[in-house]
Length: 300
Image (cartoon, rainbow, N blue to C red; front, top):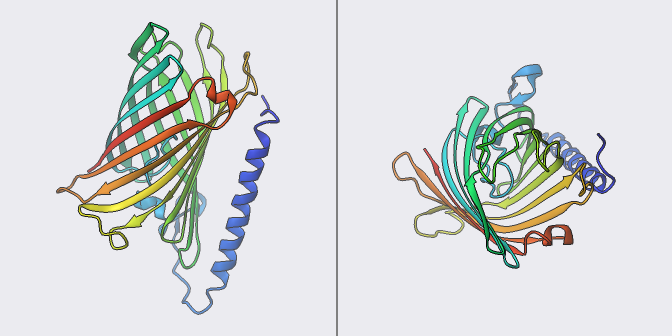
């Protein structure tokens, strides 16, 4: 099935921007003629990866609404999402564990959802999501100013046979994580979701996209007590149904948020997060007027 016309302009724009950035980065690399040539740092399948990449350090900021695409070595996480639209509101609490094996990250998510609509309540355990991701190409400029990683991921949603979890879900994805300079990071991910099984949503296909932009402020730049890093962030989340009645109607959500990475306590580093959610177009405004998301992450 082809993407709708409404989804193509943003994708083409993203590709154009990525091409311009990488062209500039290659020019910046070739301009560094005064430095000695770095030894060969390529490795992996077809030498696609680079030992110098920021991705392998596992330090990209954790997104809130957008699927995580960074390398996670050992991480436990608990999130709470609250959204409302008129007399409807929904709450989702999600527990997640991620484990890294080299460049491979495996994850499991278990959400509990409660939806309230004009006095009617539906609640229960949502789809239990199993996921994996791995990078396949990295480019790092000679000075390290520009650092980008492309990879692939897969997610499988196992229904819990509750009031909010009926259909299995299968989502192949591609992602890009980019660092420019010492502060700016941009993470993007695109997925093709397919719901199987019966019911009204059986067979539904959705094109999913997410972007996370962050600006990392180190303790040396802003010496807040107990804080290692402060990261103002912005997220953009899009969903475009590709069939059924809502085909082609893209919904867009924004999330103005920040993370506070605290100093480690022994081997554990707590990371706190808070975000304000708002719709960016009328298609999304029908379901969400506003929302709040909180996140507690433990790196260990």
